[in-house]
Image 1: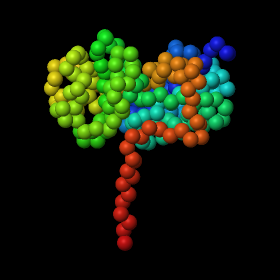
Image 2: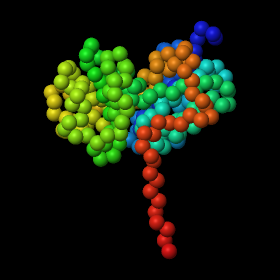
Image 3: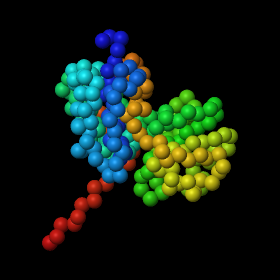
Image 4: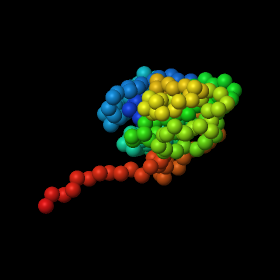
Amino acid sequence: MADMAILLNLETATTNCSVSISKNNKILVLKENNAANYSHSEQLHVFIKEALEEASLSFSDLNAVAVSKGPGSYTGLRIGVSAAKGICFSVDIPLISIPTLQSMANQVDLKPDELVIPVLDARRMEVYSCVFDNNNQEIRETRAEVINEESFSEFVSGSKVYIVGSGAEKIRSVLQHPNFIFDTTVIPSSKDMAVMAFKKFEAKQFEDVAYFEPYYLKDFVLQQKKKEN
C-alpha cells in the first residue's frame, strides 16, 4: 500500500455532518447530512461505520484521518476532532488538519485575478472569513469580523469577488459593490477535503495527535444560569 493512501475525512465545523473515504485524492464513499440543527453527536460515528462498510474497509486499512480544523461551531469541531484523535490513537495512524475556509474556497472555480471569500455565519453581523486567490492561496488571514459597507473593499476594485458560505446571505445587503457575487450554496463538506488531505499526506504534514486543538478563533463563552439562593 506504499503507493496508495486510504484517508478518512471528517467535516463537522458547521451543521453539515460529513464523512468521506478517499483513495489518494478520489472519493470512494460519501455520507453526509446537512440538517438544520447539529446532529453530529448522533450521526458522526454512524456515518464512519457505514462509510467503512460501504468501502469494504476496516479502521486498520486507513492510512490517516483528516479533520476539518475550523473555524466553526465549537461543539461541532470538538466532536469531529475527538473522533479523529480516537481513531488515530487506536490504530496508530497520522492526523491531518484541513482549514475549513480553505476547503470551501477550493469548491469555487476562479479565473485569473478573481478572488473568493468564504464566510461562515457567526453572531449578529459577524462572520468568520478568509480571502483566497485563484490558486487557493490565502492572501488575507482568517478573521472573526463584523461586516460593514467597507468590508473587503480593498479586494473588490479589480475583478469579481465570490463571497460564499452560510454568512453570504446576511451580508449581501451591506456589500453593494457590483463585483461582489454571493453564493450561499457552498458548505463545508468532507468530499472537498480529499485533494488537500492527500497533498498533506504525501508531504507528511501531520499534526501531533496528543496536542492538536481545533481552530476556534474566538474564546468559547459558556453562559451559565445563576445559582438560585
